[in-house]
Amino acid sequence: MGFDRKQVLCALSYALAGMGLGIYMAASQNHGQHVTHAHILLVGFITSLVYGVVYKLWLRAARPALAWMQFLAHQLGVLAMCAGLFLLYGGFVPPPQLEPILGFSSVAVLVGAATMLFMVFRAYDEWA
Ligand code: HEM
Ligand code: HEM
View 1 (cartoon, rainbow, N blue to C red):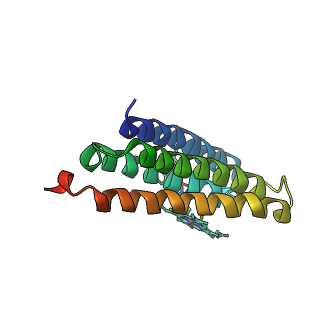
View 2 (view 1 turned 60 degrees about the vertical axis):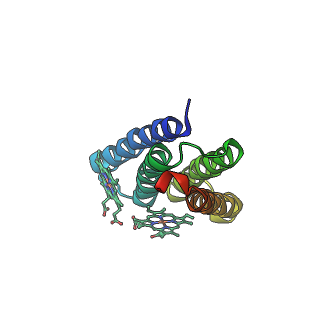
């Protein structure tokens, strides 16, 4: 499976999860998880979808090692970030215990974005 399809499948899974949480918030009239909802949808759904489109349009010849690094950094980062935010805003785990996972996941998402920038910068041929 190509990295475009991998990213789009992950993106649409986050769409379901984020919208599900949105519907739960609306139905329960408890908007306490709105930050989690925003990050599931914007970092999980929209950003992964944008990455999928970039792979499809401009990174068909991406080096597999770099593409794996980009995919894993972003997807593991989003998963850890959203799980951490859910536990934080649900009040399930005290904030100090979540700091390492939130810190790690933020850096992982950033590494995913930086690797994507590097790959696009290197992909001269696809833009010719
Ligand atoms: C089934 C669909 C959805 C439902 C039921 C839903 C529901 C909600 C609810 C109840 C809130 C809290 C509002 C507040 O307390 O201010 C919220 C906030 C938010 N939603 Fe959704 N949402 C849905 C889809 C989406 C989608 C598709 C996106 C983005 C791609 C999105 C992005 C956001 C953002 C960024 C916020 C935070 C806004 C703020 O900071 O006040 N939502 N949503
Ligand atoms: C390294 C990754 C990121 C980190 C560490 C991060 C962190 C944060 C923090 C600390 C807040 C404030 C939460 C609060 O109100 O208490 C926030 C809010 C927000 N972030 Fe992020 N963010 C990241 C990536 C993103 C990305 C990529 C997007 C959009 C594509 C985004 C969209 C938003 C939005 C819309 C809000 C307002 C949410 C609300 O008030 O409901 N974030 N973020």
